[in-house]
Image 1 (tube, rainbow over the protein chains, first blue to last red):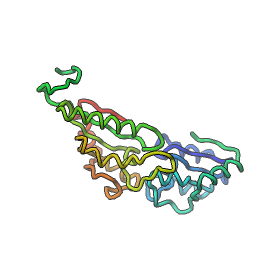
Image 2: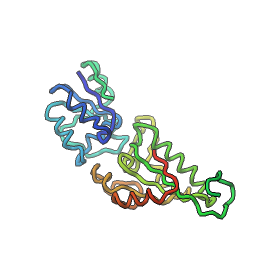
Image 3: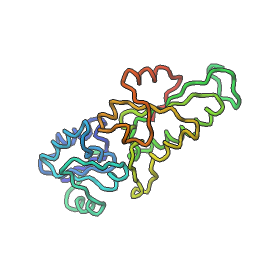
Image 4: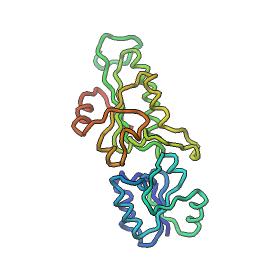
Length: 97
Length: 136
């Protein structure tokens, strides 16, 4: 399973809800506004560190670049669209919209 | 003319105070872009003395004015580039919620404009003094 999150982590407990239910070890992919969760030093950094403790966490490069997010939390893996497609091919997708 | 239609000429009444409240991140939805279009249009009303315009950035709205945005690979234009041009359209009063900046590990140095930082009480006062608030 691949959990994909595209909403801002500051909204409606979206990321929090995903992390509560995603089985340990399943990869988590951040894209669109979801990538704000990967920025270092924010109020939600603890949430993402918690995610990194039990999931591989990916963030889409184009979305990071668009938003000017340069300083990432250590351990987040930056991927391009080809990497996005590869993950989707390898896992059944659970879009956490 | 308390609630009349905006007219082409100054009515002599004091300008109505309008606040555009930016609440959403710039690329995940069109809200912020649409708020920008409204600001450009409202600038024309301000030139006629009909309105006073202010812009406030709160919550994820602060992401609209961060430096370093490059959405070219998304096929979109950099939202942040438009804000520094707004004073040319008579829109030049900018405010930002300090808590929203701090929550996102941002400071004034990370922004493309230099809005006045307000605390929650200051932001509440700003909202209270408006005739209309347009949230995006």
